[in-house]
Image (cartoon, rainbow, N blue to C red; front, side):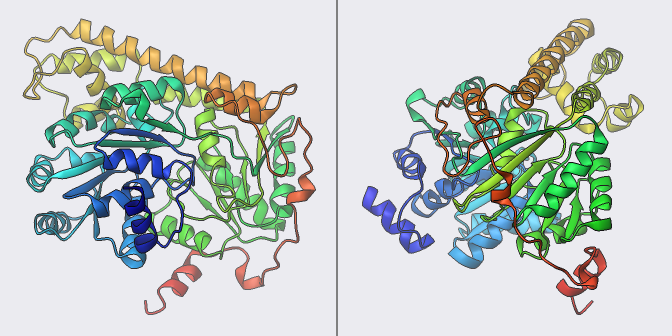
Length: 504
């Protein structure tokens, strides 16, 4: 088996050896076992399902939360590795989806990337059941845990979907999971403890820095200077769209690098262009919300700055993990300002419905059906919040086996159950925020030790420099700022579009 895997690795992917953890995960999958793979960001998670896809009969199914990530990987597989792959997601037209399903039934694909929403459709499940799923892979598997930092209700139905597809072996993959999250993932997918392959969280080549500032003015001044002085390409993360836009505007006045903002409020075409420009080296800096970064296949990012504190250590670890995937020295700095705590506390409160909204939702539920989009809009309940309410209503017994609402449901009991569940989630988020604040305020202990211990990892070795409190020279990561012509300052959306699409 081992020799067969190594031959396939070199023949199909051009690699002479596996990265740490990859061969162990793949070997267990090929033996028909379900596996939880905890591999660091940039650690080659994709190979652990792409290689088995070539060797296993039937189709390998990959559930992914991000459409752009699915599209990029399918394009790369087709162009570079010649693996027959396809994608099914909500951005496709009906005809595109039908053509993909026809291709599956005709045996044209070995690997299918699918969004969790599409996978719930009966027609998709029926096709997959007919052709046979050999491996059920779940990327960003922490999304399935109620206690993960990026909990998504669409992921909650994946265990049931796997059962309907004949219980194929499951490969759950994530870079950031606490012991609590690991336990829940293993329970949901019946993964044996001995089939958890966990690599160390520690990224020895990344230096960790915390920079304290008294107020917003001081933080912005320090950040602008650091952005200008650091060598190589980098990402600057902000918690809000407004902060992204203000920081970009402030830098463009005097900064020397090519820069652009990135957030969920931008048009999809502009986001795609910004991402393409950064990947090709035409942009030096991206200032972004956490909407940017997942699936970025770029090994030479030299630094990540957190202009504002993230909401959890899980998010922090995932975002700094985009630095130095080539193994060369990287730098991660977190700006710590007290007011960031209030920003996140406010965001947590806004994320959940009020008690009154929950009670009104349950009154509508008592009428014998889940509330319609119009009814939800009247209650000012977003589609995302509605999914969360529906999930906890189901857990409280509001849904029958056929998917309909239980007749004469006890609305008060359901409302109490939902409110209690939401309070538990809110408390968990605040606990994660507290852990993040404690890390940012750490002055007497190694930051690397603190971060890794949070994930149950006692390793704390480093390659070049460790952290602020073990001694760190920022000068080691600075370099000459690249000059730029007047035409290139600032980066212009229309000019970039004209370069990419010259015939329009």
